[in-house]
Image 1 (cartoon, rainbow, N blue to C red):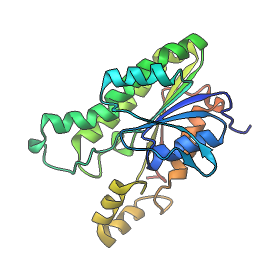
Image 2: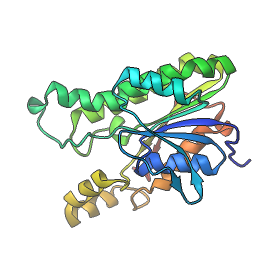
Image 3: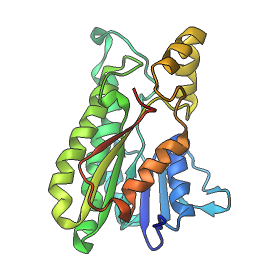
Length: 244
């Protein structure tokens, strides 16, 4: 069965670049009507398809509610926005409340309140797909040493299990994709370069397939969870990391 998102409306966060952007346009190419959201400007066209671009501060709960009210309703939610918010690894004694909140708010808190906003329509129609783009850091440790990031991504995975259990009776599935290291944006490029030749080689040697991930690897897993092929899978986290 081919994956087909015709007549489906999707909301994809983090759509300005990297994994989120690739997911948004992959859904559009497969027939979905896509609203891409980011705090940065979004180029709304790519390879012959287009999405609706919308700037939104996902750390603002009222902005989330307004987004879903004006751009929705949605059948599919992909929460890919997040990351480390420009932070680097530091000792825990140096982490301020603002540093902690910035990372937790955009990764985990936004995921919860986006789900809360889209759930009523999904419940009413008896159908919905929610996919969180978590991280291998949520299953292990953060390669950057950022405590809030590892915690927020682990929280997303816990939220996946809990919402999957709560929303399953309404025909809504909730799953998570946990990527390994993917060079998908300026932040990951800087991180990769910081390892140096020896560190890069050591990282590759720890991966069973001996290569880094590609954006397309994460897109494929995400589209599967968002599709009807995954209708009996919920509350799960799939590691897409080349094998460790």
